[in-house]
Length: 175
Image 1 (cartoon, rainbow, N blue to C red):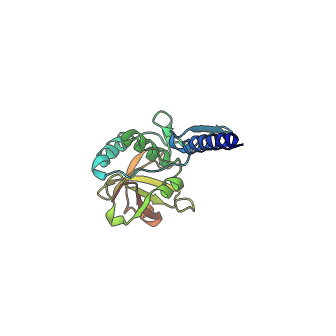
Image 2 (cartoon, rainbow, N blue to C red; image 1 turned 90 degrees about the vertical axis):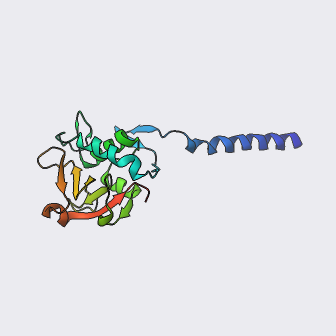
Image 3 (cartoon, helix red, strand yellow; image 1 turned 120 degrees about the vertical axis):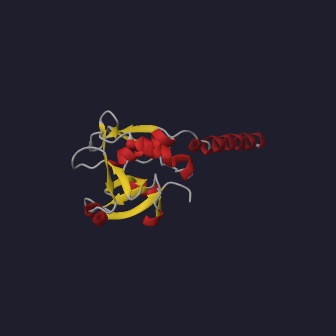
């Protein structure tokens, strides 16, 4: 009986160790019904000094790339969140969620006057608070992938179209 209890404890201990290690590995990409899903994302805050220039250079290199709804590659084109996701991955190896709403959820709100290069700007262009987004590049400008005119380009936050639809600024950087 005593040996049986010791054996049960050993098995239980091994099971606990095994299960506690499950969440510490790399995130897996899972395919469900033809769609790719990522495990929950934990954002590591980074310094502006370490990343803002890389983000700006990477995003500016995409100017003229075609817009494509759901797009997230240079070859096939980008939508707004696909562009931001791609830029952060390429420049800083930071993996972001796929949609503007989900990116907003993992970022922190900041005041518009505190925007710095690499921060995120969000707009309500289709009845949702986070239906469009861009990457702030300084001097009141941001880069985005608009569906109108079909290519990645820069725009100004003070343009009437964007100022009327602006829903906030957010950051992934440590402050």
